[in-house]
Amino acid sequence: MEHERLISEMRRLALVAGDRIMEIYEGPDFEVKLKSDDSPVTEADEAADALISAGLRAAFPDVALVTEEQAASHGQSARSFLIVDPLDGTKEFINRRGDFTVNIAWVDEGTPVRGIVYAPARGRMFYTLPDGSAVEETGPFDPEVPGRQTPLRVSRPDNAALMVVASKSHRDQATDDYISRYDVRDMTSAGSSLKFCLVASGEADLYPRLGRTMEWDTAAGHAVLAGAGGHVLDFDTLAPLAYGKPGFENPFFIACAPGVDLRKG
Figure 1 (tube, rainbow, N blue to C red):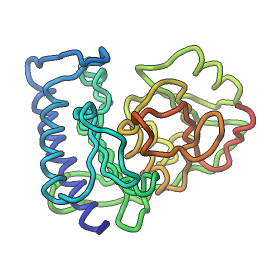
Figure 2 (cartoon, helix red, strand yellow):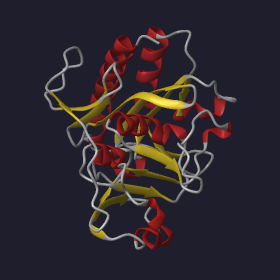
Figure 3 (cartoon, rainbow, N blue to C red):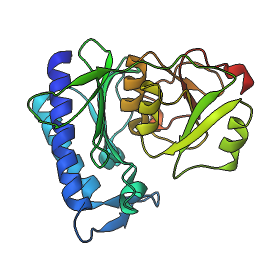
């Protein structure tokens, strides 16, 4: 994979899809349907999926592509593939809370190594550069010309005063019980893959997820966090979270900066 071309295309497509999502988001109304698993899908999910899929297939016709909205048509994935969640945080979108993202990632041999997370309603965009390091770009976001980039680096956590980020829409008692084992200075909530990016930027030290997620939910944020020096680990084994699993479903996981004392959990 030619990483410079890949990053350019992922960034451009994320911005184009983000513009289309915001057109629908800022409109008077939009249609919401239920998928076979009873999760919601909107016309924004479908429009963004169509734009990104067409762009990636045109740019990389020989590369396997997995997207959330076309998941039913995918069998066992390859070890290396592009993976897309065109609108992560659909519930945030429906409730007009703003914490939704466009996620595109490249998984190589089971590991997300390049990715972009764009939060159009928040005006924040995080991605990996061709060398794998992670940055946040500040707007205006020109699809053809990158703007100012700030390198991302995880925090140096103080285990006596951790900053924790947790899900806004999927918070439960099991998550609260797990967090209570740590010495927490403060805690914040965020939707979608923004939680990975808050750890990557040093705004949080720890993000535990004790709930169901799919690979397209996590791959782009995982790549950004890894590019900033962080880890995404299987909750039970503390092994790096792997991709290309049958059915694309993730186990529970922990995203963190190195130095967080996971033995407390």
